[in-house]
Length: 138
Image (cartoon, rainbow, N blue to C red; front, top):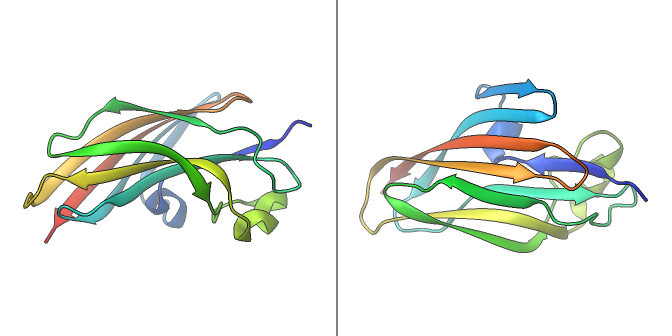
C-alpha cells in the first residue's frame, strides 16, 4: 500500500510559519529557530512516513549537512508521535510510529547562537533541507 509522507522539520516550523519556507518541485527549503538550554539534549527535528491506517511506512533518512560549531547532533530512530500530521492523517497524532529524530547538545557552558543544517529524504520522493538556528541559553 502506498502511504502518505509527513515530516516534522521542527516544532518551530510547524507551529509558526514565521520562519522562511520555500519549495522547488518536491524539494523544500526551510529555516527556523529554537532555544536550547546549554548542555541539555534538545530535539530539533523529527520525520516520519505514515500509511492511511497510521502505521509507519518506512523510516525517513535525515543527514547532517552542516554540523553545529558549538555542540553536537545525534540522529536516531525511535518511536515518535506525529503531532503535526494533517488532513486524513490527523487521526494519527496520538499513535506512536517509528521515526527519525535529531537531537542537539551544546558544548558545556556554551551560551549564544549555533546552527545546524539537515536534509530529510523520503522513500516516496521529496527532499527537505532545513537550517535550524539555535539560541543556547543558561
